[in-house]
Length: 492
Image 1: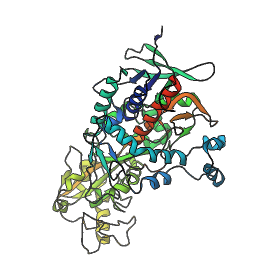
Image 2: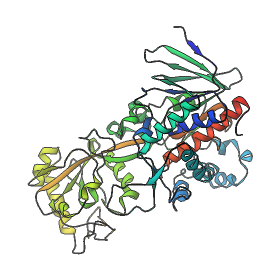
Image 3: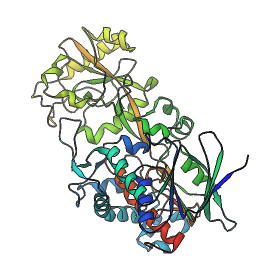
Image 4: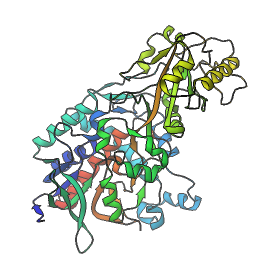
């Protein structure tokens, strides 16, 4: 089959979320001729960004939350040799190839990200993106503040797409990138894509920026990297289904160093009965969580839900068939506004007793009844307060419950099924502070950049409300640097 060639672009950006749009706008502003490839239709464009509420871990538009840096540093890798870690105090050009390609998030990358956040927010604002107070799905206060994009990710996509179009960026919808093109000298100088009808399309350019998400929409890659529990994970929103990992695979085939935690993902607790985006069920701290065997398996309320739900949902994914059930009694209706903790469009299942809930939802109701009786005996008198960490804990129960431990003894009983949804995967490719992809020998892969979920950045626990900022910062940086390299114009 003849490959149609599309020439004349300085930079080709793969992906149309916050990272890709930031890259395209920045490059076009700096004078580059830019193409953006998006596998979806115009109406569906934007990937995960389109569906996110676009929370930012910031006190204001100019000040980061107090725990922003510590969370990134605490989740930047595992058991790095002290000698290798100590060498990062040297200037980057003096790092050994081992350290430059090491599977950890470079301190230099973290510090440059942090320093660039306020300027990136101001840059987005200069293009018409506005910010306001972030909402919340819980009753207890967040451990650190947030702001949010007004209108969420959808407004971010709409605003930045319009800006890119005004700057002359060319969008190719329903076109999927497949393979990088490299020169005889090894420089990335284009890519091969395919149209909706599977016909190939070649783009020749000065640089390629991969901003096409992670691999949460690729069932095979999820199971390969995350393991058997990946069978039960589904993307938290529709945009995630389009993130099939081609950008990561293309870069790895070209020799990119892997980075980020391939075995983990950012999870959220959702109602599997619902098709709503982010059908969150965050009410479980006020009840108990049981598995299909009718047994508790985790402390439901070790602290504020915003700080602990990721550990909970990953543990849910490890249960039989990757599901758990939040059991509540009718005292839940005494809590004002408790439904703000639930974003499912489905009501809880309600029955006169726990056994009937089990028959309806598919868990062992008799065992669950015994579990709840044991839990009730472990509860102690005290003041129940759903709006703070009330310290009302069980005694002599394993696993314990550290807060909100009041007996479940008032029928009817209510239950939400909960599965772990895959918001995005953490594994990606290694980049430097300019968003240039680094190969497995610690050298720059010339002509190749990565931003957003395609770059590996997080290990272990995701630092909440930092991903949109990551996309904006490194997308912008990739666009500016790629323009300078490809055209001799723009920022260096």
